[in-house]
Length: 304
Image (cartoon, rainbow, N blue to C red; front, side, top):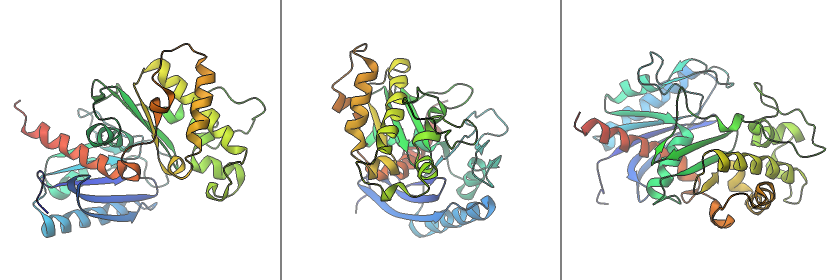
């Protein structure tokens, strides 16, 4: 296969697994290798370093590396802890240096961002947000997170947004306390895959689509979308991740709940176009790491 550009490497570091990918984009993925994200950060990062070096020798030269990580993470390039995972609930990963350590593995231009920002960048470059400068990518999986793109770039201030930890109005009669160890009944504590499992005592995969828990989940996710619509005014909200990919019946439920919640206040696009699945499907995350690498390479070569 002829290359459409220089070879890039990406690391999508998720809470349960890590994907190492080499390629130039969705039409040119040379290889993907997955490893478990164990509770021993040192061992997991050592595996990733070895994979990157092996891929560089076997397939390289790799021009740049992108790391898209679960968080929270420090994205301030002036900070001494840039590239660190900070106060995560995942055992063994708090205050762990991911960005600088993996950058040293290849010694190439390296970008570091959140997993959801990476996926959002990939959707804008190759997926269902092409041509849009202002949109959101939401993942609903083990946790809940969102990448917000404004003017073509991820937004952030002192840190990156933690949309999954906002609180929304609860559905009447739902008084379950939630599963988030920090905030209890935030969006992640009510609507993530781990929250559904904690609420029911079993995997959400076994649930019929008519189970009433899905109406509760849709209510929470619509509340999150309401808040995104009235604060960030995205032109589109893409919803992916393990829960959304496995439960497509949630989309019409969320659209109905959002329409009811907004009560005609905003002049939104057609709801089927406003709330949509990602165009890249479950490849949004790994390709997000490649998008971060592409941006890092462009930044390294741009005139100072």
